[in-house]
Length: 264
Image (tube, rainbow, N blue to C red; front, side, top):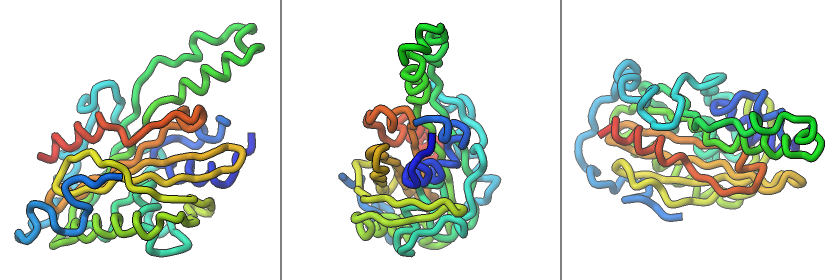
């Protein structure tokens, strides 16, 4: 089934969250502060950036998130030079959706957490099910799971505060939507809106990008960026099954909780 360019952009923006085989085969309030540098530790000397090795010890791993499989990011997080917006001020938002940390971190690392559920297609394999459409419904339910990419990035000086501010500013500036491109795949978000954030860290901003994909309807993609001292945690969650059924979903709370606990 051919999907619209809007669906493909959402899928491509989430390439670090789901394999393309899965995607192509299927048919607010601020927390503590909004990333403007006025958090509880504003004015204190910034710590030196953590190394990549130190970040790898802090990022979630298998066993940290109940009910989730945690491992490497499928396909890898793309290079930021390959993720661009028609309006440069919107790039922090688009890049967050692809798991890319804002600004120029001294070090970064990423992991992917996939919610584990029983596959409903196991119960819809008879000829009768195939004939009456139950298998298609079960297929949609099998993809009703949160897939979250987590990126930790560490910065020198006030880099983390400035990075979070860039995302927060972009959410507001790009509320009316923007066009973007990743590795040659183009599409358009019709609006960007701030959402209630998790309340973790020193400052944070959560937001959704909405893509009106014509016959495919409205497709939301959710992200949150949280500052823990001079480290930023970038979360991007996609749920293809929820998109298909128009079911609401958000950034995965269990993943955020588990990662925040490791950063305390």
